[in-house]
Image (tube, rainbow, N blue to C red; front, side):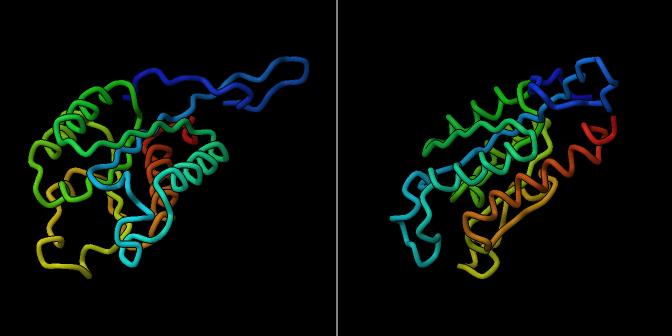
Amino acid sequence: MHPPRRRQAGSPATPSTEGKRPALRAAYRILFLDGPNLNVLGKREPGVYGKQTLAEIRRSVTEAARGEGAAVEFFQSNHEGEIVTRLQEARGTADGLVINPGGYTHSSVAIRDALVYAALPGVEVHLSNPARREPFRKQSLIEDVVVGRIAGFGGFGYVLALHAILDHLRREGGIAAR
């Protein structure tokens, strides 16, 4: 069962009846969490990660979320402990998450454990396709504790991940099921 959600003004949950103000529907709250080095996107290895900055990706996600009636929050840290703390805080305050742990994908048991604790459905996203990269990048320590993974589509992968997590939440008894 999901915790109470913030309400989005003007979004009817049920068909309105003439002369009555429509009821408001809950907006899903999605946390986007980015790990180390993602703050320097656009400058760091653009041949691998693309020229789009994290700020540009966030603008695209925000626009897509607005169109879906969802609320998004963004967090980026180069520090494993800060990521763990933010995941712990997400329990009960977010409905789902999209996570790009960066290099911690392959090494952080602590982030994996924090994902398990947060107990939120999530999508793992990567700008490049780890399966086509160095052998050590082929292992994800979080792939078995998220709903799915989107990789290799650059910054657009974040928008795809937003749509994927919203679809999952709706199918699992969320807004569309009401």
